[in-house]
Amino acid sequence: MAPWQAEAWLRFERRGDRTVHQGGATAPLKLQRAFQQSGGHCELPLLHTAGGLVGGDQLELQLDAGPGSRALITTVAAQKAYGSVARSRLHPNGQWARQRVAMELAAGSTLEWMPQELVLYDGALLEQQLSVRLAADAAVLTADVVRFGRTAAGEGLGQGCWRSSVEICRQLPGRSRWELVDRLELGGEALSSPHGLGGDAVFGSLVWAAPQPVDAGAMAELLVGCRADRAGLTGTMACGALSQGLIARYSGSSTQAARFWFCRIWARLRAQGGLAAPELPRVWPFQEKPWGGTMVQPERSKASAAATVMACT
Picture 1 (tube, rainbow, N blue to C red):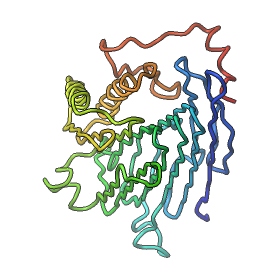
Picture 2 (picture 1 turned 90 degrees about the horizontal axis):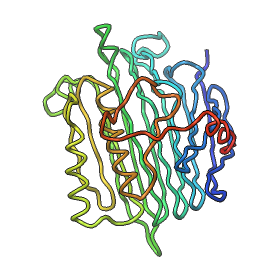
Picture 3 (picture 1 turned 60 degrees about the vertical axis):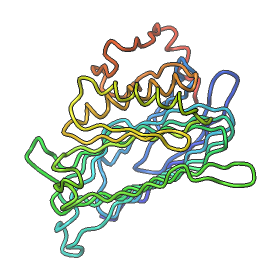
């Protein structure tokens, strides 16, 4: 069967106190129903109906945020990348699957890209690229969690490999400035070496480009809070400041611990930007409570939820 070549494109616009969207997708990508969150963000889940990526598949996503818009984009379920190495006589060394996400953020916009975790099967080859161009006062938050192998079944990544490229460029008057250029390749010895993951099966990254410069005192306080949010979670977690934002890394054995820590940071960053506390997307595991007793989630009545179901369409 020929590899999938799929595209999705989305444009978010501010309409009064809410954000609306328009867009489309080609198979196997599918846009799900959007929801208006109580804080004004348009929550839109993306579904990959093929059930996973195989060698040669290519996914292209174009996400545009209009002036003042606020959007949260996630995925309906964990993404799977199936084994490619030594699976075909035609391609014994395997074929790379690729996912490219491009974002354009206009003035005053906020875009949060928070897919559910990625699971790489034994022999999987996957390359991810994220490219962000944002206006001087726009903000972007991205979070990725990757598991190398189905460890519960005693499986590792084997001869597989994962590559990641994240580029964030801010457009300033008369010039542009790189906020982050981050390239990673994990596979083989890098997974077991103490200079790599040291045998950990889970790796995660969270990146925040802030809408305004954060002064040194406020950033120091923010980082202290983010580090305190590691309490009760397993794994190695570290975070540090960017020129206008922050980056956090997780390595360990638990995708849940990575998600929980990133969610706690997410809440702090929303507060830092003067935005409403985050609401967990409806498609995420409903039984999870990442904030524990540290934050009370806003509750909405059934009538209120029904009234906002179509607000993002």
